[in-house]
Image 1 (tube, rainbow, N blue to C red):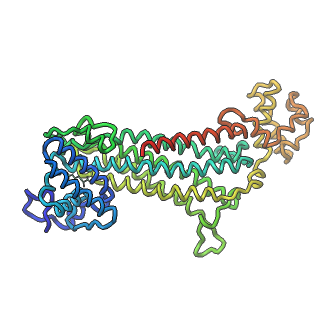
Image 2: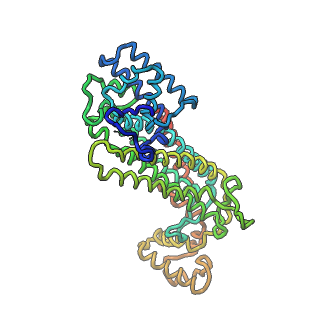
Image 3: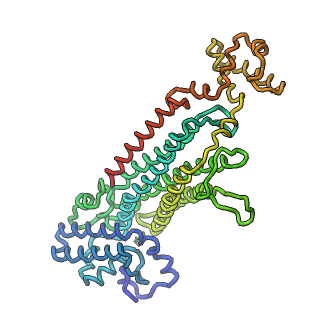
Length: 467
Ligand code: ARG
C-alpha cells in the first residue's frame, strides 16, 4: 500500500469502506489547477522565507508545472490511494522529483490549502456564470426590441388586470438577472481573501509574506484571523444563495412561459428544437426545457439549505463536514451553466401570437382608465372608482361590454361623463398614457431598453476587468 500523507502515527490500514467515505478525490479533482497554482505561489513564499533554496524551488516548480500539463492534457493518472486532490498532486510531485517534494508542505495544512483552492476556483468561475447570465439578458433584451408593438394583458393574482407591452414584460425578467449579477460581483470581493498562510488553524511559524502570496494568486486581501480563515464558509453560502436566487428568477420566468404556451392561453409557440414529444400521445409538444428549469430550482434552493445546515453547529476550526461544501457548489454551478444558454436560445426562438394576446384584452381591463378619465374631469379617484364599479355592474347585468353601455346610462351614473369617454376603450391609448419612468408606455419602454443596453455594457466591461 502506498504511504498516506499522514501515515506516520498509524499502524493499521484504513477500513476500505471508511476510506471510500473519507476520500474526496472524485469531486475535488476539479480543483487541480487551482491547487497547483496555490502550490507554485507557496513555493515562492517558502523560498523568500529562506526555507527552500533556489534550486529546490526551481525543481518543485518545474515538477508542479509538468503536473499541471498532465491535468490540462487529461493524462494525469490517479492512484487508488489518492485521498484528495492535494495528496494526489503531492504524491505525483514526489514521483517526479523525489523527497524534496516533501518540503513544499512546510507551514501549510490541507485546511488552509483547500479553502484557498476553493476560493480561487470561485474567483475564476463566477465570471463564467456571469457571462451565461448576460447571455440570457441579451436574449430577453432582443425580445423586448422585437416585440415592442405587441400589447398583452398584464395580470395580478393571475387575473386580467391592465394592458401592458410584451416588451415591458420581457424586461421585467431582465432586471432581476441584473441584480443577480451585481450580487455575484459583490461576492467576488468577499471571496478574494487569501486563507493560505493560516496553517492548520494557528498560523505559520516561518516568515512568510502573505501579501506577496495574495498578489501572486490574484487575491485582493489577506485573511485577518487564521481560525476564521480555515473554517469560514459564508462565501460558499453566499454563492449558493446567489445561485438559488437566480434559480428562482429563472423558474418564475419558465412557469409563465409554460402557461403562455398552453392551448388555453395560446400566446406563445415553442419551436420543435426546444420541446419534446410524448411516447404515448402523438399530438403532444412539451416545454421540457422550461419545466426542467423550474424543477432544477428545487435542488438549487436545497443546496443553499444544505450548506447552511452543515455550517450551523460546527464546533471547531476545520471540521471534515466542510469537505462536502464543494459538491454543492459544483452542482449548482453546473446546473446553471447548463440551463442558462438553453433558456436563452429557447426564448429567442419563441413565436408570439400577437393577435391572441391583443384579443385577451377586454373592456373591463380598461376600467381603471375610465376612472382616470373621471379624475381628469375633476372627480376624486375614490369616487371615480365607485362610479366605474357601478358601470361595470350595469354592463354585466345587461350582458354587454363597458364600451357598449349607452352614454345615457353613464351620465345617469355620473354627470361627469360625456361622449369622449369611449376613446378610453383602446388598449394602445391605455398603454401610451403610462409614460412615467418605468411605466409601460412605448416611449418609457424605449428608454428602458436603452438603460438595459447600458447596464449590459457596463457589466461587461467590469467582467473583462476582473478576468
Ligand atoms: N479533502 C479535504 C477537504 O476537502 C481537505 C482538507 C483535509 N483536512 C484535514 N485536516 N483532514 O476539506
